[in-house]
Length: 318
Image 1 (cartoon, rainbow, N blue to C red):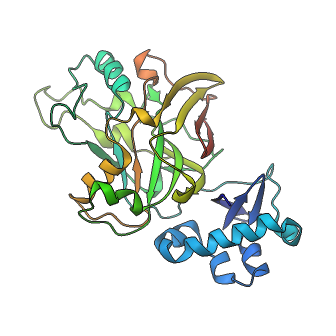
Image 2 (image 1 turned 120 degrees about the horizontal axis):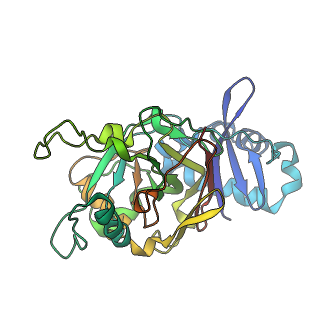
């Protein structure tokens, strides 16, 4: 039985874990008490992921019992119209973000930036490429307003598949890499395009580019609303991915268009640095970002990211 996890807040600001089963959402702590497994019910998603090999089976069993006898869990039901979502992870690990991982996006950005970018890195023997987004401060929850950063006038969107690591992983073979994944989610790699280049620095300087200013600011990594366990995703390479701004479809693609697939990215990263539970990989964005048409976000704009089988992530710029 498919289930998904999410974080939500109650008054005054306590963090809770929820479980979505079928069309309903439940308070996991209450479900755990009903089934006499209070320790599992009290887990945050962070704690569950940290012990994923131990907790995944129990959570799956809980979901089956909820689905088979929903009346027994009526006391755990949440009013979905009133859920106040919290960031999917309270204390995320490192956020690794893939750059230039859809050919159509690379082609479009090459024109927009007036730069010669490699369209077929695999064919030319070039390895995957990632940058790092700062962790906790960058995360934003589903339906959480995101403040327009004062340092940019060209704020852009990037719908991406998010991968959450569920075990310590070092020197992992591609064939074994997906076994390291705890789950998947929707993400939006917000980007301050006018902060990428430091215009007062010589163009030949290695310090010309500012990836912190470009990619790291408060709320720059909306994530969620749900954590979908990997067992419910047949393949991360066959998922539709779309993004709308104010109801207008901007990005419409499939993860089948990844230049480097999820397993290859995990393997590559794990050969450079050990990955840990709670680390996140953003796997790249397809064509359709604002930079391609010189169209950018402004206060009042609403973004929606949809990924097949994972849910829909919505945020408003304020």
